[in-house]
Every structure is written in C-alpha cells, then in structure tokens.
Length: 200
Image (cartoon, rainbow, N blue to C red; front, top):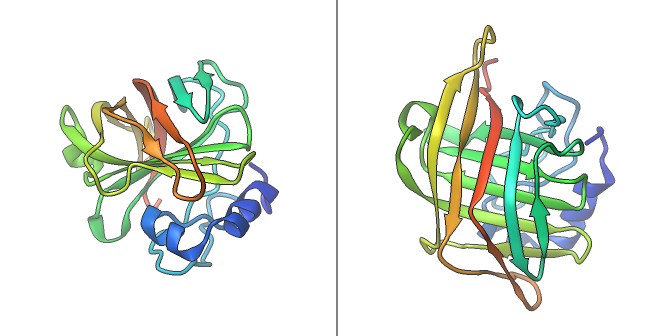
C-alpha cells in the first residue's frame, strides 16, 4: 500500500469516532516503512503500520473463507496481499493486519499476548473486518466469539527485533456490522505475518 494511500484516507472518512474507539484500531494515512505515523484518531492508542507486500508466503499469508455480507475465498499465494503485525502499547498484546487482494478489504486480529507468551495457546481474539467497497465495519467486539491458536512464533532470521507470527483463527459466530446491516462469518483462517518491534 503506497504512502498516502487513498484506501486508508477513505477508512478515516467512513469511520465514526465511536466506531474507532470500539474497534481499538487506529487507521490513518501511514508513512513509508520503517517509520510509524505519529497522527492519532480519537480514543485510539495505536498507529497502524504501513502494510508491506506479503506476496511471498514466507513473509505472510491469509487463507480461508469469509461468508455473509462479504463472500470471499482467501488463497495463497496472493500476489496482492499486504500484511504486518505490531505490538500494542505497554505490552498489551499484538495486532495483526491483513489486506488481501489489494486495498478494498482489511482484517485485523488483536490478542492479549506477546511473541514470548503466544505459542501454542488458545487465546480470545478481537477481530475487525473493514469493507472499503461498502464503507462498513464488522467486529467481534468484546465478546469471546473468536479465538486464535499460534503455532509459529519465531525470531526473524538474521533480523533482530522481528518475529514470524503464524496461527489459526476460528470464530463461533458472525461478526455484526457496526455501521449498517448485515454480518460476516469468518471460516477457519490460517495466517502468517511479520512483526517488527518498535526498537528495530
């Protein structure tokens, strides 16, 4: 996603401050990596990273299917996939960002674990899906509707301060729309993303 992406600018336009607070995700126009955008949205504590390409399955992947208001099969390899992972502030966990097939869909997975504590655990996950085409947000909210199991948490080869984070996401029900009607039900999703710590 290039710097000054109209996709992220559009997300800011369609997201009401209350929705952003509920999601706990900051979506802003990001600068080119490795910098982080210093801007902020109301009630948000995390800057979303610039999402780098993840066309190589060793860098990232997202496979599975979404049902309902968004019907899409997620496959690998996906030459247009962009993804990244970040630590929440003050050791509060991790967020993983995936934009499959280009710039019109964003999946965010948030968990209360760090690379050192996530492996082989079944963890409750906060899942958010943004549909740029319709300008809609879908979220699991605070309910324990979705879970993750991380099966790959490895330091990046020869790259201090990076991790390869991989696992499975599964949800017991649909994610309702926060603005508008409808819902999205994620099938079992396999994911992998590269996490870069702030001091890298």
